[in-house]
Image 1 (cartoon, rainbow, N blue to C red):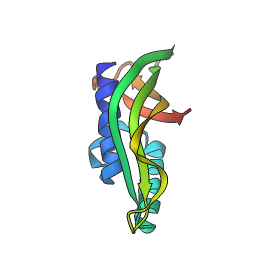
Image 2 (cartoon, one colour):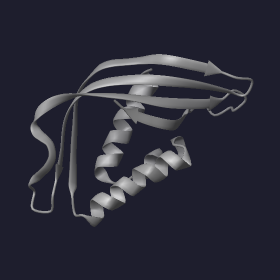
Image 3 (spheres, one colour):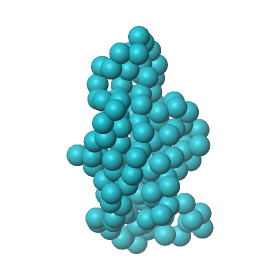
Image 4 (cartoon, rainbow, N blue to C red):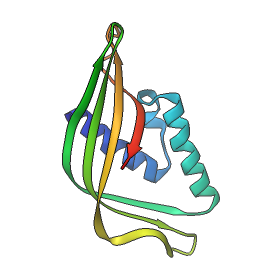
Amino acid sequence: LTGSKNFFEMVLKSFVSGDLENIKDFTKPSVFKSFKSAIDERNKEQETLIIDLKSIKENKITKSIITKTSIKLNVKFETFQIRALMDKNDEIIDGDNKNEILVKDEWTFEKKIKDNNPNWTLIETKSN
């Protein structure tokens, strides 16, 4: 869970900055592509995303699936964040840059059992 928490923070920072290189090797290609598409759209519209992670209220495994070849873990994150999307004139078009909100996410991580690499791969993200 400590690793998932650290990775969660790393993904948020990378997504906000628009630089995904440091998470690429730990993310399923389709998830990476989804993140990249959102960043490309934001850049095209000259928008700025603000995500300020204030605290992690909950970080727990909600489901585990073990097969002959892999382990999948669903991890629930309940976090308090300040989130806002700003247009090119620094006007808020979504969110609030002053007040914290509770954000609930569930991420699915996978690891191949016979893989000597200790790292997990992010294979799915869901927001509630």
